Amino acid sequence: MSSAAKEGQRLLLPKPEKLRVAVDVDGVLAETMEAWIKTFNKLHGTRFKLKDIDSWASWIKFGISKDEFYRILEGTWENWIEIPPTEPDLAVKVQRAERYGILDIVTGRTQRTVPAVKQWLTNQGIKYNRFVRVPGWRYKIALGYDVYIDDAPELMPMIPPTPGAFGILYQRPWNMHVIDMPRVFKVRTWSQIPSVLKEITHTKKEIAA
Ligand SMILES: [Mg+2]
Image (cartoon, rainbow, N blue to C red):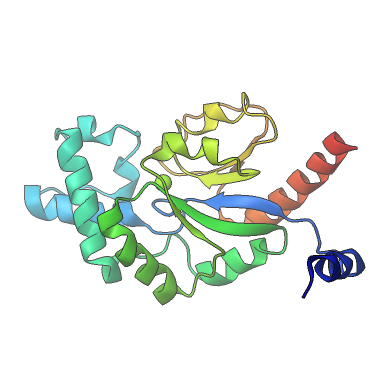
C-alpha cells in the first residue's frame, strides 16, 4: 500500500486516541516479594510476611545488604512459576485497562531474568504491546510515556516536573508513605485503573484544547 493510501485509510478510520502506558512488573503484576519473603524466611529461619516489607529500602529492616536483597530477588525469577500475580483475575483486569491505553511492559529487570518474566506474563495470560527493559526505574521517565503504573515510591516525585506525564501508584506496604502530588493517582487494585486512565485521557484533552 502506498503511503498516500495508508494516510487516506488513517483519515477514514481514525483510531481512538489511546494513552501510552508503561506498566511495571515487580510489585504491580507479579507478587515477586511474596516469593522473596519465602526465600528469605527459608534462608534465615524467620517468619516475615509481605506486609512486613513496609519500606522501599527494606534490606535495612531485614538486616541484610542491598546486594543480598537483589540477589534473592533475581533468584525468585529463576523459579518464576512460583511467583503469584498481585491480584486474582489479573489478566482480565489488565485487559480492561487496554480500552484506554496501549500497555507496554516497562521493567528494570536484569537481562538475565527477561525470558522468565516473559514466560510468566504468557503463563498468566497477560497481554501487552511491547516489552521494554530499562537498567533501573530512574530510566523510565526518559521514555516519555503518558502514564506510569508503578509501585516504586521514588518514581512518583519525578512525575510532577515532567510535562505531560501521569503516575498511577499501585499501593503496596512499601509505598504507603508517598505524599499526594499533582498528576499522581493512587490505586489499591487494578479494577480502579480503567477509570483513572479515562480521567487522564480527559485531562490530557482539556490541556491540549
Ligand atoms: Mg516495581
